[in-house]
Length: 323
Image (cartoon, rainbow, N blue to C red; front, side, top):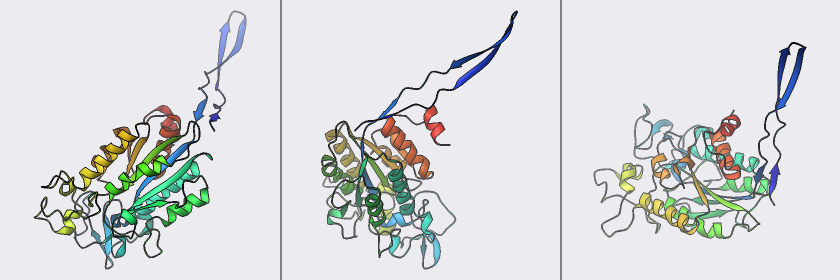
């Protein structure tokens, strides 16, 4: 079903004309904006639920009751840098509402509330060491859904550890998560004129090869500890001696392969950290489709305007909507 959204009432301009015969009031109507057509959207979400999503946006965690910096890269806080963090298992940031996974899930709940009734959604959650088959779980398990309660439940349960929806664990299996998108996209509702869009929400560097094995980075970063190498981007770029793409390169290649096989699907990306935008630019369909999570509601509104109405960032319509 295609929905037509009527324009707002046109504004009326009033002017007083003064002449020999006295004065008169003239009214004119501003040109009405065109009717905006909304086609059904299938939102395919790739959600990072690795352990680092339990840190705050800067990569800080709380270990044994002490606030520490868990990631090599990013905004350098005054906290001590350690390499023994393990995400939500033992070093989740002390304030749950400031964790990356909390912000990510709030963004998805906002999208669920803003979507049109005929829009549908499905989530591909990815992480290593969490028990997912192939490090990927597709939610809702029974297929695409437009039901608000069903989608909220899927968001709540994605990646949760020990029954806590805002604690996550495992290494970053971004390449596997993105590689799994094609099969899910191909099963999207085939309603007439419906469009599928991908939204990737991820934080720090991918650290798991496409085959599911972790990158210890002994060849690319031998001078770093395993904990340091896991959160250092350049350790996961390029290829190994046998030509195997390292995790970030594999992630980029997976996104490019998806885009080539699904040229009509837009890929958006949201950086859940404050320092992973550069690699996500190479994953999204264009640089204008990469966002940060610093203003979660604004970010989701912008993406929805782009996907539903073709309004680009920086336009007057987007500016008005963000107020």
